[in-house]
Length: 109
Image 1 (cartoon, rainbow, N blue to C red):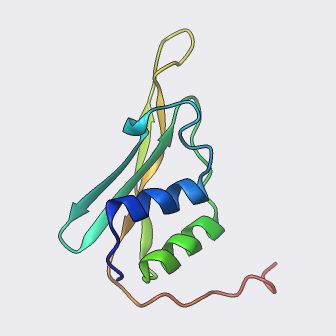
Image 2 (image 1 turned 180 degrees about the horizontal axis):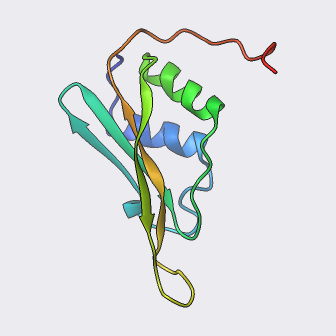
Image 3 (image 1 turned 90 degrees about the vertical axis):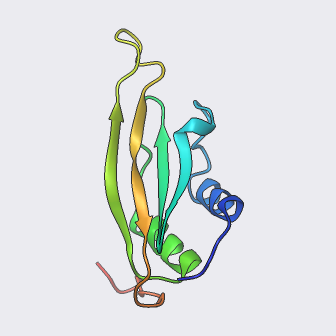
């Protein structure tokens, strides 16, 4: 698995989820290192950010590992009447594994 700095990870996440911080502050995004794996928290206010195969594939390439998994779902309700302050999302875990290998998607269907 390729070593990445927190700022490189942040830049990649904001590239893949460009609207992530539109309704929120930095507490909705985070990187935690746990020995040989990295957890990346991706959440937003009001609704869960999307998670596509292309985004997972891009993170696999970025970290040079085929082991990118959803580790945790985030569901924190906000204000009872308007949901302000809510957090919805997930934690993705990047772990050492087989090096990245592009999976062709042209003929999948």
